[in-house]
Length: 349
Image (cartoon, rainbow, N blue to C red; front, side, top):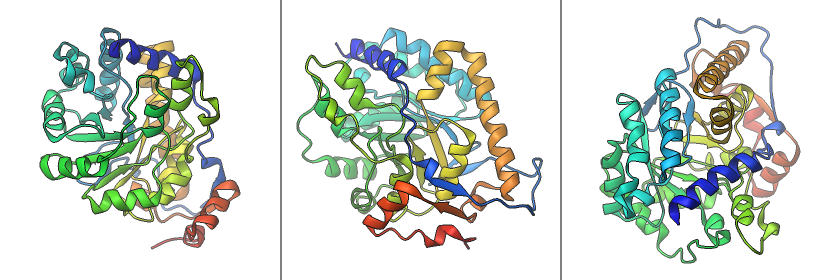
């Protein structure tokens, strides 16, 4: 049942695609016609908490737990290895419950023994399960994914969410690797970000709407869809600004509908230190193959380098100082939520 559901998710993700309404079109970068930079001087390395990445692009959690997904994870790991990207696997609960599924996750570390690999379980996991997931991959970090609305729409999903924060805190205190809390496409508001920070979480992946829509995917699997929930959540740009009210720059990753170099640079200018990508990479891999995926990553890196040069930013953290004008529905949301946008409009310290 679980392995069948894993492949359902992959197929529906490819069919539904990405909405593209991640909010970043409301972010207007201010040009710099006197940049003190060159393409040769730009470096793409970055940090998320204590993790050091050679690229701001992260191959974010997608799949695992079925024979067919092992091939997907293998090829994603090849691309991550060849271009130095960190990579997260999908939820390992399938392997925790049935060790026969472990190979579909372990293949990532086998293919990329020296790379940054993130283990992954949901907020229902306990400390012992989290430790098993990390050990399974010799992982460098552990992701805890939050997906309440997906579970509620999922016909066989969870219905009880008591004790989530307490379990997260116990895992943070017990693990010897950094813990990343991530949403799967509905966003993390600042109130929840504050609670997670209080619980000891050091890295947040905001996982806003605009990318793979797990409400729509689960509705496609239901006999009686709850289609009115397909628009649930906050766009990625909005939830990024919400999280940055609580978490400092250098500790937040933007995920959700990130498809282009411009999307990545806008997220970085807003204060993210990395950008997770999943749906686009899966689509390129499945439709065009591994070589095309590596080529697409090269194109993204080239685009980021060109934009950083144009903005006069030689390092990722220098993008945090560059001005941007935030307009449209994103500005309206921030006004209603009391988020001050004036600092973004001028060169920041």
